[in-house]
Each structure stands twice: as structure tokens, then as C-alpha cells.
Length: 231
Image 1 (cartoon, helix red, strand yellow):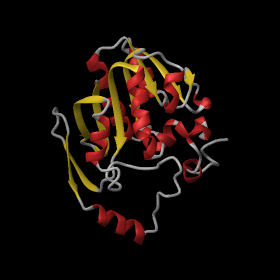
Image 2 (spheres, helix red, strand yellow):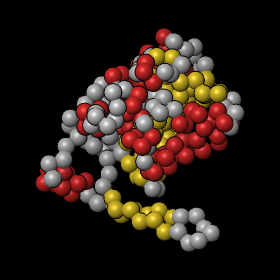
Image 3 (tube, one colour):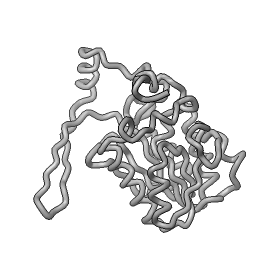
């Protein structure tokens, strides 16, 4: 099976455990915007100076391999055996494989929205179980923005964005017949409904963790980062 004869929409209709490794091919899966989120993951992990971490959801393995270059051992888990994680286990069953507080830091990036929101509380408890101190969690955000990037030679680039009402996004999706309902991988995003509004997300997180830092990636505000400390 190759990306040449298997369309992206067909991949997105598969359950996460059945997605072939080819889905994560660099030219097919990795965009500049996605690489920026990897950079933020690495920076947040390095800031805590762990010697070993648990990465829940291996994806294409780019982040764990970068961390290894900087002397951090990354133990990986995933429900998808074809991705060759160190442990094949569901995020809902981490306590069956790992001891309490086995890792000083756990990284879980863009994983939880692949599960029904009814599982959110249980998954947070599983992540609380396995981390000794820190959890770096990223979640998708429902947003609609126009982005601008400015850079002067020799200086860092600056990104700004102008938000627009989500109702406008939904009207455009309706007019253009664009739908995400067929994506069995994606059950929810922050602010996609009242149930998953940011207030409720924060309230559930605070049952298990202190929120040390929260931010959305300036270059792509659909990515929310939480740097959390275990209670």
C-alpha cells in the first residue's frame, strides 16, 4: 500500500489502530505548520530537563528522535502496532502496563481528540497515573483565522492572526460542502461545542493537574499546549 494509490480521505476514515505507517510519510503528512508544533513540543520537554520520557502516540517518530539527539530517552506507546512503538497499549489502559509515576514527564500530543469526549476524564487519570511530575498535553482547537507573518532580515519572524466567528466558518463549510463528520479519527476539538468549551476542558484538567503554562501556537492557533504539573 502506498500514498500514491490511497487517498487522504480514505486514510481519515480508518480507525487509529488501522492507519498504515505510510500515512505518516514526510511528503504526505508533515507540513511546515506541523513541524512548528514539533518544535514547541521539543522546547517544552527540554525545558524540564528529564532524562527519560513517555511519549503517548508515536505518530511519525520525529519528536522522539529529536529528543534522543539531545540525550533524552523516549519510551513510546501507541495503539497502532504498525508504527512500532515500544509498547502497544491504549491510552485508556496505561495503568495495566506502567507503574505509578514511572516517568518524570509524559508527552501526549494531539491524541485525546481521537477518543470520544466521554473518555477524557478517564484518560487524564491514566496520564496522571503514569507521570511522576509533568504532562505536556496538546489538543486541537476549533478556530477560524487569517494569519499574517512579518520578518525583517536578521530578526525573528512575528506571526499575528485575526479571529473570525466560528459561525462564518460553518457557513463556508456548508456552502462548499466541506465536512469533517466522516473523519472517524476526530471526535471533538476545543470549542467545537458547549460540552467541549475551554472552560470545561480546563476544569477537567484541574482535577488531576496544575496548569503551569497554556498557550496556542502563534503560527497555527488550532494547536493548544498545556504544560501541566501533577497534583
